[in-house]
Length: 272
Picture (tube, rainbow, N blue to C red):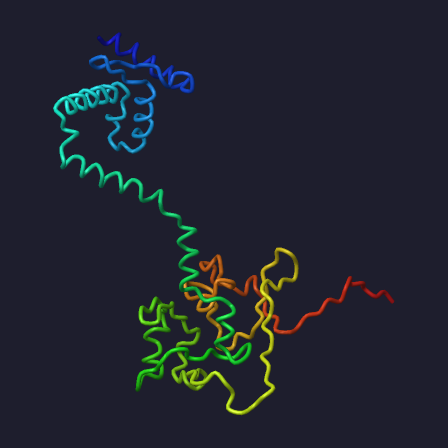
């Protein structure tokens, strides 16, 4: 019996080496029903790395377990256990659980979230009187709900607000408690008096000294010392959202340049 087992196991191992040619090779039969070599190798390779106990990784022992499993499976089918309502119901639930991870598409989910809730640069600048101006308050303010204690309930740590169906922007300066000194509520879409006022144009995205260089900081840092409040998290504008929020020393690579730059052509050093 021992010699027979060794011969069988040797055949299985050899078939594993030439798996592409012997997937349909019969390993053994149960009541004239064949069990193929490919099935045993697939199950063994799948489970050997997740078995914790070393004694259960033995090839001989695993082969005996596999044979016992096939015998019990044959017995269960002979008893029609696979037709029981409880079994088919559990099998259906298990199949649904297995399918779900394959139906999920993280990239598509992120795109749908962005379309539904994400701010973009257009809405970002529309909420300001001009480039560099503090954002307006785009929602209703309850009576007595002005100031740090009220505003910071939402704007200190951010998060999703069901009532507004939006992510709350995080304040870069939570220490400034008189919020309405700079931020005002929008009550009209027109000017108080006729005006020829035109908004100044914001800087272009990706303003870099060289191709591949980190983009510059196109604004002052006054009241904007916390870069991650605007450039990280779900409330950040997607076009300027950082890909590396774990690197907090931003100015090690990104330098401030508020001045308008012009193309001077090819630089030539004057030699006198």
